[in-house]
Image 1 (cartoon, helix red, strand yellow):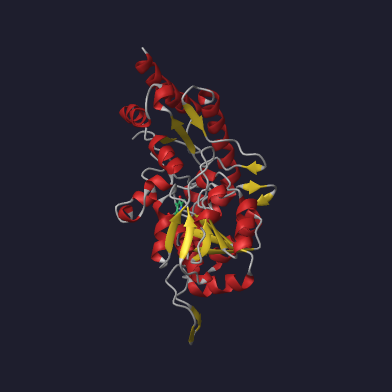
Image 2 (tube, helix red, strand yellow):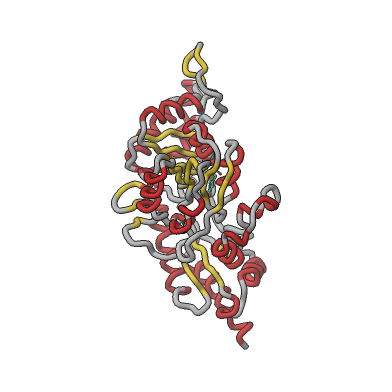
Length: 371
Ligand SMILES: *Cc1c(COP(=O)(O)O)cnc(C)c1O
């Protein structure tokens, strides 16, 4: 592919070299070193949160959070997400219960949550999918009413603000991914944002094998510590994050100019009260109205070496390892969107010319069929 769906942002080589230079003096490469500490402090301020801890990846952020909360039974979640969300629930010994999504912003349809609550339900795990903010107020109300924990999969929402607050402030916990393909990255990495200091203390111990001190092991923890090289990459990338998001905004605006209002094309909404990070640009194609389906558009782009992706298809409930357990008919909106959605290339270095070329190709698909 000449243009991929995403391309990792990188600081200048020299900037990274300068950042890691002192590691050659200290020989302290992991286990909560100076880079790790510094990144936590900077993230607290950038993300406007009280508590944040760093881990090896976004997936472990989810697993550790559920383990630290000592959840049991069922967790209400969305099937319209990356497989990690569902795997994290199952690997924590819990049962995912799939809630349908909202047809406009693709987040969990909050009007369908309560009917899924049973006496086994212990938590709700919604996803701010594509960077779209969930109905956090309604979710909080439902959780309070039924005594449930709320864990947000915030993998797509680094830098997002809702009503002036950092997105990591909602729910009991928000889990972020700092994977190379995300808006902000540490090569591989993740973060857990929390308000409860006691919870934060458990995470801190748990991510290091549950070792409390030299002689005391208090939790059955994995190894989920972020190393110094990854933290150093984070420190460099954080210096440029605002520029990166501003560039993504320009590209997103161009996509909107070209594609908004085209019959048979549905775009992700511009949400009120949200400062976006422009993480993804999903497009839902209605084949009957547009004259070409999602798969056809994807193939047309692929011919020109442009890699759009079917995020998110199939639904996680339809993965081979879960398929027999779940009825896709119970989440019809998610099923429909997943059959029709295509996520277009979007990264800071994508040029407006390239964006226009992608739009031209998409719009040509329509003409070919209409003739
Ligand atoms: C990327 C992602 C994850 C997993 O994060 P990693 O850092 O790759 O482990 C989890 N959930 C969603 C929605 C993601 O996009």
